[in-house]
Image 1 (spheres, rainbow, N blue to C red):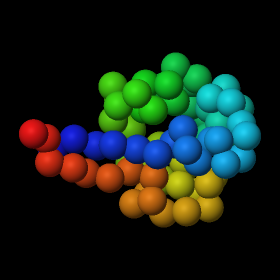
Image 2: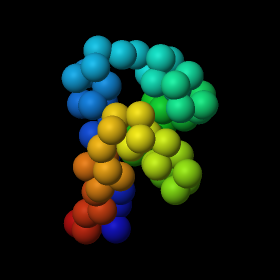
Image 3: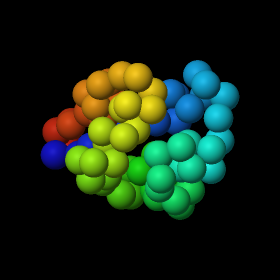
Length: 68
């Protein structure tokens, strides 16, 4: 299974940069970038922080899909 995310879409809705999001949730900009690219799978704590920041659920930000 593969984890996909919509962080970039949610950032665009608020018109914020990766750096601004990273600072708000105490992660590095590189980590945000890696999550958005699907290179890095965030910890549960990080996923919850991101969901809280966007005032949504983890399921709205991250989705598990079958790899083909």
